[in-house]
Length: 274
Image (cartoon, rainbow, N blue to C red; front, top):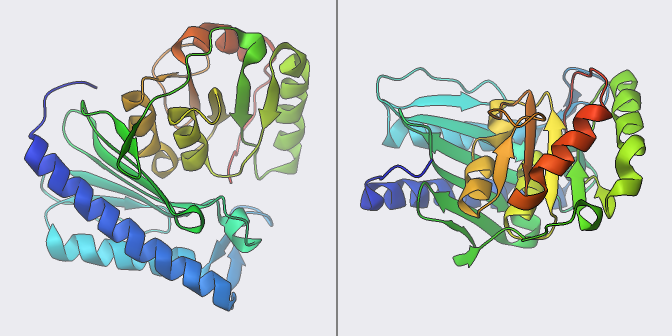
């Protein structure tokens, strides 16, 4: 992930991501404060989508298409476009829709751009908190333009660990049972409700680790790069390459211990989400 990049070009690309995330996110925040008019369900009765999820993605996709028409786009709400360039934008217009629905502050606009090598730039903007997490491959991670680093926790018993649970009631039962098997071996568990924010909170040291399963590319495209650039270690539950299906992000020194706790306490589960 530390390959050299054209720093000037990457900085311009990141600035575009920040601009689109801020405009889209601020509009969504203002709309939420004015009140919701349209709330629908997707995969389950608790998997929600609002008019602002759709409007935010429509705005961001429209701007990308106008500014960089040859780039590919992957969007949570269906705003996909296959382009001819090496660049792919991955958009989660509102990560943490349940939090958004309940007027909780823990939701974000997440935009990541990858090239032929992998993730290149990423931004996670939390409108209700006024916080913008950013990263460029090989250039470190920032929060509101200040450099951030993950914690240096070395003892698993002192680790504050975050996770997420499925939209499926049956799978939440399985996942919570797994956590119950090892919660006494760590400091405590947190469940905040938006994968991109959870990952960024590892990056800035607000939590020590995060794990979840059966996510989507748009959940982690920007945030995982931010975590890596903060010095965190990422992988699947067994320490292999991370994927949306399984992702574990933590302070480097506790990764292996947490991996062991998760895998020895696990059952198969599916359908995670926020």
